[in-house]
Amino acid sequence: MRYTSIIQQWKKPTISLPLFNLVLSIWVGIGLNIAFYKQLTSLTPYQGYPAILFLIGSSVLITAAYFFIFNLIHWRSNVKIFAGIWIVIGGMSAYFVNNLGIIINADQIQNMMQTNTTEAFDLINIRLIVWVVFFILVPLYFIYWVNIKKSTFSHTLCRKMLYSAISLVLVFGCAYLYYVDYAAIFRENRELKGMISPQNVVAASFSYYKHLQPPKNTTIHPYGRDAHQFIQTATHQTPKLMVLVIGETARAESFQLNGYDRATNPELRKLNIINFRNVSSCGTATAVSVPCLFSGMTRQAYTEKVARQRENLLDIIQRAGYKVTWINNNSGCKEVCNRVERYEIPESIRKQWCDSKGECKDEILIDSLNAYIQAIPKNDKTPRLIVLHQMGSHGPAYYKRSTHQYTPFQPTCNTSAIQGCSQQALINTYDNSIVYTDHILASTINLLNKQTQFQSALWYLSDHGESTGEHGMYLHGAPYQIAPSQQTHVPMIMWFSTAWRKHQASTVRCIESQKNDVLSQDNVFHTMLSLLNIHTTTLQPTLDLSQQCKPQLQNRA
Image 1: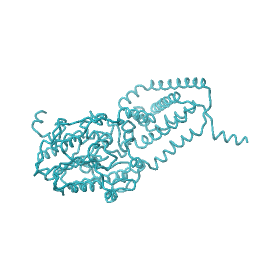
Image 2 (image 1 turned 135 degrees about the vertical axis):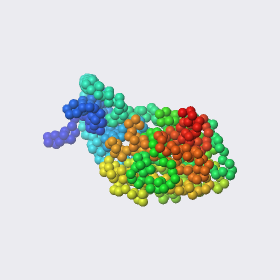
Image 3 (image 1 turned 90 degrees about the vertical axis):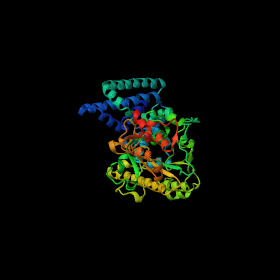
Image 4 (image 1 turned 30 degrees about the horizontal axis):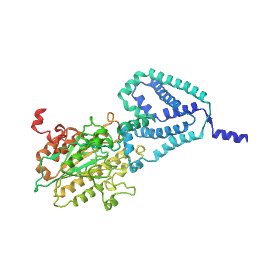
């Protein structure tokens, strides 16, 4: 009986609340934040023992800070509930920070809120499962396993006050010793706080709900109400058809057209396109870049709140008399297409290009565009803008972003656990997705070139780029101030049919002359209006590529 009692005590240990909080603080403060400490240490000039002491001091500061917080909010009645929450959100946050170099901020919370189930499942891999087992399930079992010792309220309160005071002494002591270092580091690297789990999720979620959460029953304010076509299409003149392709996660440095030493653009190179080599995105995530792209605001002036509460480029073009249609093969249009036609892709086309989970190859866009154009009556003279939203190179499952015919680079990384693949296999897989995008764009151009009902044009640019292990970073969504060029330098091309070039020869020549200039997504809103012959006071000539060759603008400069 005595032996059984000992075994039972060993299976269910009883510890005090302060000790439980201390163990939790060490696990959360140190165990989940290895990447943060590595980055923090790399930003100091210390070497040898001073570097070790700085690392120890920083670890003590973070752990003591968590211990102070836990002492305040944890009581015997709620400690296991709160501890479970910290373990889950901290463990998941730490996976993305430590394994993919992702910094958790409000934009990342926004990305998570707008991610569909298909994209979420792409993140599940063996590494994530192993991580969840050891960094979430095992700690959760420990929380369930132990008993918290009972104590009187007065005794508990006295111990809380004592340990809270000790925690504050350690926090302020370490902060005082390394104040100059912390001030210099965090002043220039504010994003570091997004690497500390789980506070990064808590702070980012609060920021999201305060600044980025979609408001309910939002009143949409008119924008560009004076928009009209200043060159009316005559009955004998061919109407315009502009196809705007919004790419996904394609970076300019992986395009052969921009000097990349691999054959990632075998089809586009044979076509009469205009390739722009120096274009930057408005954001590093779709949830920012796409609304910003259509908002009429520059990157520096862009605010989510304003973009959500007023009309955008599509509304203005539609008001001017164009038929505007959005054809989607992504997780949605981020609300920019709410007031225009959203094309319902025929089931016969879906069956050809979509898998059982509803994830579709981008060739579905070509067939859908063809079906859409074929359904336009021959006597219809309505000018049109069609937006194609690609799946593109969306990660981490890059191997799903191309068909077998368009995978020239081998071996490939056939998993979403990309950090476990060799760098070469990962690059091969990503580059194959660019080859497939090249095929999609070339096929779309060839389709437009065959039809005679419209004078047609294609404009392609990616929403943002992608990191594939450079600087220890994967995927995208890094704060713009520190984002590497792989996430902000995006490809952009234009193509104009013979008929379009004939009617706007000088405009096309002017735009082509700027193909090597430093440009950005700020130029899209204003240049698109000009290309479609739409006049509105919202158009800023200085951001309109088609007007940069006009003498009056040159004289003003």
